[in-house]
Length: 436
Image (tube, rainbow, N blue to C red):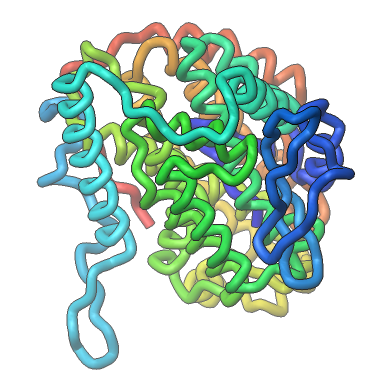
């Protein structure tokens, strides 16, 4: 299931796969694919014309290579609405819900951002990272990230051009890392990916955050996380979502599905809010802005799930709450049969309503972002939400029809998003809970 790259981008609006990514990378003049040797995790650095060059952005498994590819604003932490505060297990013990677990991560991320920003102000300088190349190569690495973003996320790429150059480049770097991570389990060589391969990818992530990038695209992200208060945990959690895809193809209830949606999509909001920036006029708490970013990721992924039912079923995956399917009188067999019945339509109506509610929660946080970041984020939100309209227009047939937003509708959405992005942060915003 493709990751919904919120805040940063919604890639599946334009392109649903990245099968040609490695080939496109090899065409870049920086990379000399004929002069590197494969190892267990990846490829060594090589020298060309006596100048050190970045490693190629591909990974390899044992046998197969796979392609790289403040209070009074929004809801405060103390009153954050939960789908359910606790869950009772069969033994009668009380356990935290997935939403509470995820919000604990939100609180930690927001706290970390506050600490890092204070530290940066005290030092009045940014830490340097260890780069095996030079500034020219680093600039080329960012440019390559921009090319990938332009190729696979055209609409949002145009929006990033409205940001400051530093923020724009950082968003590109984050996008590319997320894209490459998603390709590990959804790319052309996904069938050869093992848990150990994901462990190696996570180890490479650790090195990246320590200022030891493996290749040119890693170097761009390594520079980004050194300049902005971006924490490693959401990146780790996204990899955990990839692990989940390797071992799990059913979700017994929405609580389980919510955790999955956080892993593969909500994490991107936590990664990118520090780059997007919060408006100096915002009265919202840092936690509440992160919560809105999280909501957008959840909403995007729920939309992906409802759009891709047939595609996922063809791979033996059903990303729908099993208990809610049963309540609607549906089973796995009905999903695999792919028939649009009254039961299916009623089920889809309830799922679409939930997704729209979560989009509404996310939209409340867009006005709290830095002014230069609002338009691309809001455009992404409006365009992705329209996919739900298209599912309805297809008579809820997500088995054989793929809902997409036409170019004309996209163009019409952009000025609407622009006008709405001009609305300044509100001093008082209420936030209702996301209803399951």
